[in-house]
Image (tube, rainbow, N blue to C red):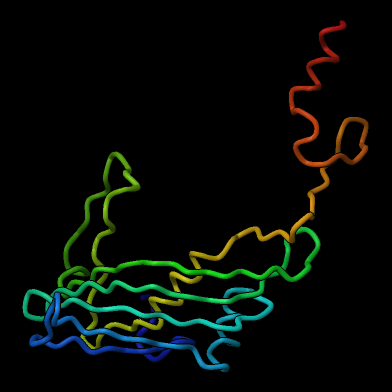
Length: 184
């Protein structure tokens, strides 16, 4: 979370207390974006509309409130613009995610790894004193789940072919120009 709690379009701050538990004692939550929040989030993510955004999750707190792990499932119904035709493209998203928070995360230096392994867990995010903004975490993961290049069904991308004529993407091999060189 880059901004402090309360500065986001979809802010739902849950304060983490030392007596909170994990497992069967974990805190559960359900959040739903209201119409004004959905309009603001649609603007933030460049959407035509955001008809629904909600999440159900839990927060497991350990180490006497110094560490927390949020696990959630978000559901969204969004409308994006096709990158080719600008036609509306509906995106139904259901995404599970988890984020670990630690009070000491911002104080320790993380050495850059020589090898990058996509399967390793992300380092913990700092656990702010005022709590976890679960709404902003949901918004961030919603943004990551969106298709960066949505296309309407049946819409093809035209690319220039040999001699300037337009062809369908994938119709002509990029190596077809080598055929002309064989004859020389």
